[in-house]
Image (cartoon, rainbow, N blue to C red):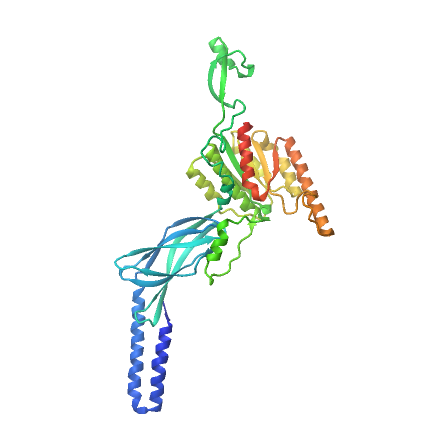
Length: 465
């Protein structure tokens, strides 16, 4: 606990000590009166300091041990203040938030009511970056009874702040999909095909194909028996996320609508914070979680796999809210690593661990020729058993040369030509992967989640899996 002087102490010191000291210097007979006045002020100041230390004794704070938030969205969590004396008190409170958090005010004034041991306060903040953080403590300040001192102390707190990717804007674009109105989005879609999952046996009906006859059952019963299949309702969907060096590439951020309003409402004395740039990995994580919600909506099993030059994390496909929370907890702390991806390692892992045919949505970057060559070399390990969809965000400037006519000078023209050559290389890579049964798509940053979900819905509709 620390005792610091207030303006009132300076005022009374100037009002009592200086005049009486000057009086004692000019009139020696008034020395005793001046000494009594100065000593009285000193005793009052000392007694006020002792009382100030006692006023904060027993005052504690409590915050929930785990607080969940979303990046770039205003969050509120409850701070409980203990007042064991149950007397009306006015104090000033400031939380020691991490640097990645922006708050409306650095501190707040709180009035504790009488006959109440625990008071509640809602603290508002906005996290600027996803990840795992710790709320280390808070600072509490209370004035002394005479107003000469401020009593301050730091209260330790042990609260974990989990900041998840912001899915609000992405879910708004896909609102129709998450409505409970049929199999796919707003309207039920007619299913094409017969499905692959065995349902039952029945008597042969003229017109049934020879490939549908169950020959063992036919031999056992002495008459033709046909197999009946049903449409697959529970399929495994895995999102494979590349967190290697190319995933750290900066991308244009997609800011939520309430971010500007929160910043405008922040206190003028709040420190200016630099918003971390959005990277390719940030967009991958957001799209992966949105795809997980879509798979949950459709009744499929959803799993995640992260990798760099080794396997980072693996969660086998399941469903349910608790499983989705586990997937989200596995992804929200993922950071890009300055290493080259090892596709041999990850594809061998998939080949050994995933026995059932599954939909693999791979989010990676293949504009590096060495990385692309390694990918093409190792993709046969899984493409014969699983349905593989490869998606990447093109680097800035990688586009057809005539996609944008705003070229101001010769340097800009050469930049467009270079981007066109890289775009052409990616198209040729897509043709190579297509011959191996792998779909390769260049997605748009602002439509990444919606395009991934559209791919998934298309696979469900066509029953390719």
